[in-house]
Image (cartoon, rainbow, N blue to C red; front, side, top):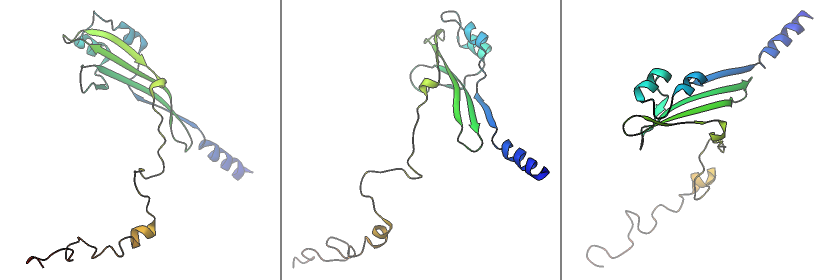
Length: 153
């Protein structure tokens, strides 16, 4: 009886939900305090901290990314909540706009197995092993004679 109860408790503990947080800790009061036309890069950094990443091309936008993930036992983790805060600056470094996006911007991809599909032939194992039989010494290959020799004959 005790062994069965212990096995049940150990088995149930493997089914607990795991909740994790990744990235920036969003404080709504601080985010709402960043105002276009009033703040600049220095004041945004003082208020929100260093961004998660900055734009690589074009405008120097700052991004603050926050994500809550949930996982059940051995299943793949899935996002439950996500906030991407984008702070846009003008060339002088003043805040132009603050945009927020959420889970609607997550792209769902479905990889097919452990190999990347390519265009072209699908060769089986036997094609790979025996596919070159007869190709050795074919016309135009080095070491074969497929045209007139060096003296024109």
